[in-house]
Length: 269
Image (cartoon, rainbow, N blue to C red; front, side):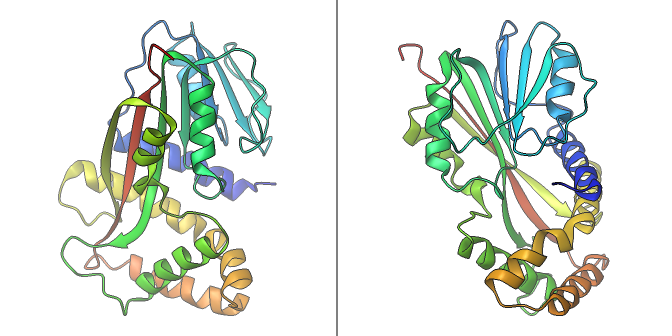
């Protein structure tokens, strides 16, 4: 079960993404008359509820393995417990499918894309929003010897040993194309870690990103590092503490990237 701290972090991630996208909930050109919307891995349900408020004529279904969504929701929003990696059993197709930050949950990304394609109406859109978690810096201030870079390298290594792709954003466009989508568009956004950018918008993005990482650092790593890399719990605490300390240094300019990729099911399908 997701604890309260992780629930709070998921809502921070929603705000972070919304700020990064200029206040938009999605980038795909969804027609105003789209009525059936599916939100995969809805988490706390915050995206589905905001979408329901903005588009009262749409019906939004959010699914997730964890039933952590609130009971009081807009009348056009509902939630269900479901595993999107199992065979989908929906009898009516969707106009738009939204999938965000499923990197720690999906084992078979190509199959997920195919199921999205199959369960869209002809001309419907799917949108995938996910990360490339490779930490870098625009000016070379993040070095291999930094604890944060070691932390990031170990996180990526452990994730892949666990059969989890930590950087799905890099592959979303290819997966969509292979599934049969057309009119695919891919966009990439910088996510700074901290308020070091001079640009006002990136400074705000960085502040929210810094907060969500600080909230979840140990939660991201403890099971991965102990189970797949042989770390002790104490060793995890040490590398997290060193990474936290470095993240507070304004001279260390860390960033990674958000990828948004959307595509359309052909009208002739």
